[in-house]
Image 1: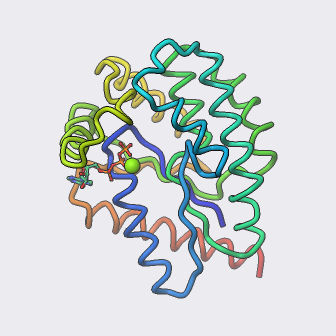
Image 2: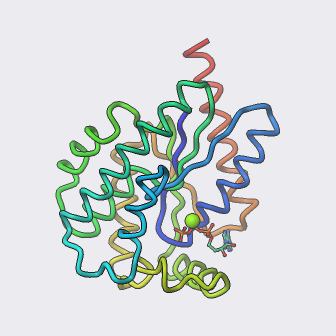
Length: 217
Ligand SMILES: Nc1ncnc2c1ncn2[C@@H]1O[C@H](COP(=O)(O)OP(=O)(O)OP(=O)(O)O)[C@@H](O)[C@H]1O
Ligand SMILES: [Mg+2]
């Protein structure tokens, strides 16, 4: 089974993935956690370019193809092998990030982005996507506090440095995209305590695992 987490910066994706991993392992699943960009060896090189503050001169098309290249490698080398081995693989961001950031955020055509992503993922769309939704002001404040604490403002701050207007567009884009894909994407209110958020996520994941069990025996 393949689960992804989406949402703007600071919504709590990484925090919730840790909780979900601990829970799933406790009930006996083999869990693998991965992320985008940078889920594979080659992807780690691409991540450096994509998230570096010095990459502000990147063209929209170049950025798009680097994300797609990262994803194609990630799917082939990490995600598909894990699914085939019967594991639950959880990715911190995936194809929906590209559709929403490059599409709704930067103005490329979401339909075209969906088609390009179909090529990159070659059939391996997630079984379930958790979209953590929050006001951009709150998410960015959380992310900034964390970055200051972890001292990584320089290395990975490009998206956090984008305007609030951009993040508001991205948030709305996520909600629009989720409504169009409501068989797969579940929206969770991230303006709650980590435990409250996790209870909602847990219920959705357990429901999906049961459904999978019924379908696949
Ligand atoms: N529900 C919550 N309430 C308050 N603070 C939270 C909550 N969840 C996470 N945080 C804190 O907010 C910060 C951002 O959380 P986290 O790193 O999990 O977000 P993220 O979605 O992974 O962000 P990014 O997109 O930048 O990777 C962290 O310092 C985390 O401890
Ligand atoms: Mg994170």
